[in-house]
Amino acid sequence: MSTVAAARPTPYSFEPASTALLVIDMQRDFLEPGGFGESLGNDVGQLRRTIAPLAALLADVRAAGLTVVHTREGHLPDLSDCPPAKLHRGAPSRRIGDPGPNGRILVRGEYGHDIIDELTPLPGEPVVDKPGKGAFHATDLDALLHARGVRSLLVTGVTTEVCVHTTVREANDRGYECLVLADCVGSYFPEFHRVGLDMIAAQGGIFGWVADSPQVRAALATTSVSHPSS
Image 1 (cartoon, rainbow, N blue to C red):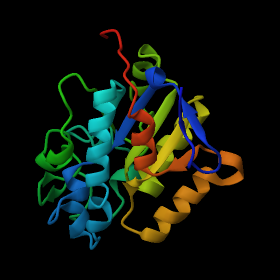
Image 2 (cartoon, helix red, strand yellow):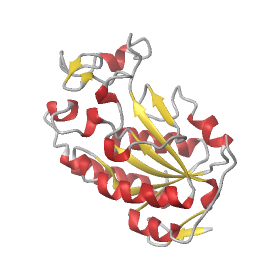
Image 3 (cartoon, rainbow, N blue to C red):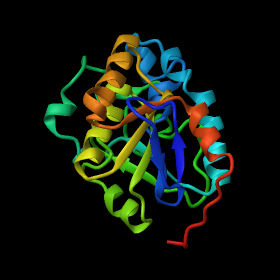
């Protein structure tokens, strides 16, 4: 058992063999300078600050042998999996499926849809393509985690108040214990980031725990686990 003593609201203990690192939507469309996110007037630097700590954490998690799962938000080329309530959001020419700086916006197979080079998944690491904000909606993520015996999640990625928050809420409803790493999640809006983390840890950890990645890396320093092939 490993423990992150500095977590909010209380120390967070987890069994490495049943814990996965979840890397949510670290995609070019959201993080690349000159990409879709920046074209909307957002400061992508607010998201890119997560890359270095997440890359360091990812290296330690891999070395320790924990499960790593990546997600990507995006849709089929014909947009048949994109409901009108989502498809019609945003200004014309800046909607899902429209031509963007890195190909059609949030369409699977386009350059902008894929994960940034700094965090490229290794062979064998699952990549879950999701059509919604939450990583459990209309995906096989729950079955994948159960098959690997995962019951705890180290949650990272973007954005704090949207896809990260939605996924943590979904995970909580399914019985997973979640530790959100504050320096490895980000929002275009710093206030949303702060409040989103406060909401997770509020009321004794209503949705989970919050900590910084150095504390988790320290807890993993002497950890080594192995998993059966799946």
